[in-house]
Picture 1 (tube, rainbow over the protein chains, first blue to last red):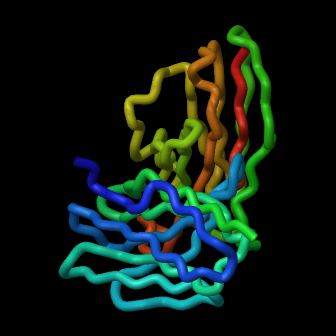
Picture 2: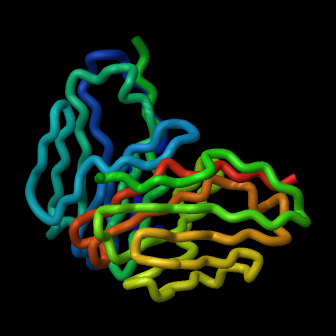
Picture 3: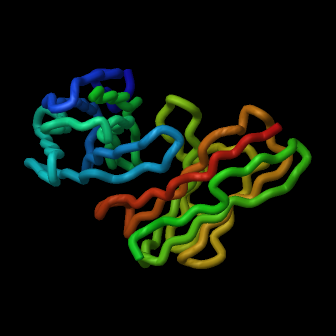
Length: 106
Length: 113
């Protein structure tokens, strides 16, 4: 079993829809990261969480340390949100989930 | 400056060539990382430098040779690569062990022919 599991693997949404991507982890962590990667591009850090909830624009990230689970929400999704979203956890090193491929159709 | 800059953006090299990838940051970060990412896969850690010293080598073949000339620069020297080494090579930096987050570069797309 992978240390970091993401779901779904693929997600197609219609513009304007509310989107949720989930991440579960099985190791002790000091922080959890949500990252965004556009096709062929570098990685952008969206959030770093160690507890609670963070919001930036239309993006919201939450974490439940006891349940070892985090969610990334996108409100009023837009085609420019189409990208791969990666959950990564800080243990001894950064451990990545497999990523969720999001496509938002107009 | 809040960026990690990687050059070149694209590189095509033959199996007998020697080339280098460069990574630069001016955020005062003391840890720098090389990752390799194959298509549709998450990044895989290759090397970690902490305070300009190599602290982690994830059993990377010797045809990849990292170098950290100073706290702002990280190089990856490439020699006698194989076609399966073709990938996106990402550099990242962090203040400590990532407790304050990571900053990633946009990567070098390497093709070995």
